[in-house]
Amino acid sequence: MRGIKKEIFISFISIFVIFLLDRFTKEFIIKLSNEELITQIILSNFLSLNLVWNKGIAFGLFSIQNSNLYNSLTIFISIVIIIVFFLSIKARGMEKLAYSFIVGGGIGNLYDRVVFKKVVDFIDFHINGLHWFIFNVADIFITLGIIFMLSNEIYKSKIK
Image (cartoon, rainbow, N blue to C red):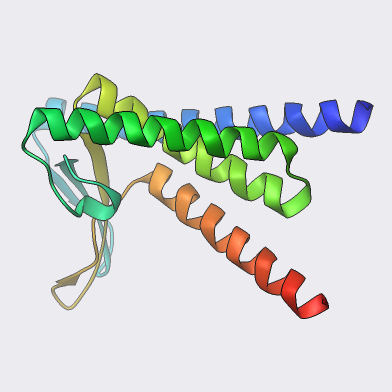
């Protein structure tokens, strides 16, 4: 029983740390943009920090202008996060970590949706003028969580 409580505690800590890391980076870029009136910081030939307010879903897809549709999507996202959270409680090992990453990132973006009515994105990868979708730290953890889940499933299917 002690091991289960320890795993749940570690999940909560992981989720909380991911949320805080996401909030810190978003608040930093918002503050920098407001105080310095800078919307883009070029870090290298392929990476910039570029503040974008995203009203859509994953990587800015399906930008929504209708507030009823936006609110419905936000409620749906909240339900999915709750379901994934309960799945994380029952999961073990790599699967628990994957769910924790998804929940932590999901809560980070959900916070933006509720507080700002849009999500703060700012990480901009580009090569020779070709830009990938602008994203944030929460998106990184959601993506890593999904990759971990897929890798875990592939690994389990190869063992059978």
